[in-house]
Length: 205
Length: 81
Image 1 (cartoon, rainbow over the protein chains, first blue to last red):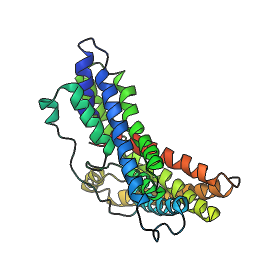
Image 2 (tube, one colour):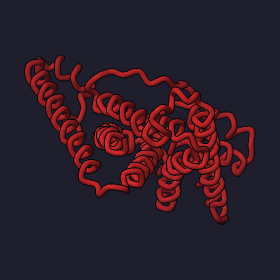
Image 3 (cartoon, each protein chain N blue to C red):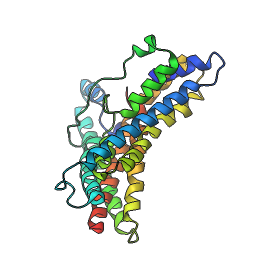
């Protein structure tokens, strides 16, 4: 992702302008993720009453707790658990066909939406399940907006320290070496969150 | 550097080619058990944190954790191709 988005940003900054393109990407991520969350919350709101027998908040904790524990063992590479997803990436031809600002916005929207592209960590599913089971478009949008923020903020921070497209490529290469650590951290956080949600649901009941 | 977190298939293959099969399999088992132990510790901490929470703020506590989880999912997406 770094190797795709940041060269566009650098292209604009090189011409001595403010990186508006970066803000557009941020906006796209935030809006895309919030829309996904609102949609998932809406789906949860129209779910049959039998699914939400425990009430929306407890159902959300139970469902996301189970999914969280299940995917924690996958993230720690202990058991293979299927994670349904599309294997596609954002279309690279947009960079050639569209102006940089429109490209950054569209990339942000699709990356924030997240469902139509490859999902790198299964932590995403836990947030999505919680957004559905919360049964509220507002809570769903709030939850997924955090995903959008998390997706866009590092790019804004990283882009300040990069001076050339070669730097972007070097950074993308360096980040690859940390992928195992990222999955490890996600595994531990999912285990923590999963047990916390399940105990929470027992207490709330 | 972070080989102990998860076996890298390429490295395992290289080691096998250097006849280090036994050492690799020991490292592999050790790394696996270490991850299982850490998983159990994290699960225990999660359960304790919810159990020891004062009554009445369980929902807010859960909401804060799910927001943190969603933020982590977004941050980790930096490593997507």
